[in-house]
Length: 134
Image (cartoon, rainbow, N blue to C red; front, side, top):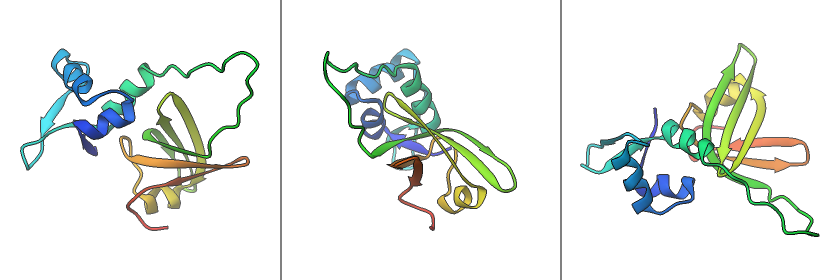
């Protein structure tokens, strides 16, 4: 599974580095040490905590919404068969599900705990990563 530093986990969880460290101390997140001696957490564990603590803010009375079109998140689930795949991302308080080819999942190197970006265009969701080939 991919790992991330405490500061990266804090960004995806929407909390401070110190909060992530306290969660590690309380056992909410398990941490290990990377080759450089830095504390790291499993990306999938971060996604699970993000899902459990997700509370989308409500709109003020009388307000309407225009959703943003890019959501950075963590892959929480993958269902892949020979041709198609379903990819689930936890993007802060939002769960985003995308249907794509199994080939795209392999090309992007997606796995549980991977960081990815969901790009929303009309009814289509495109998933981007920093690595992989497109």
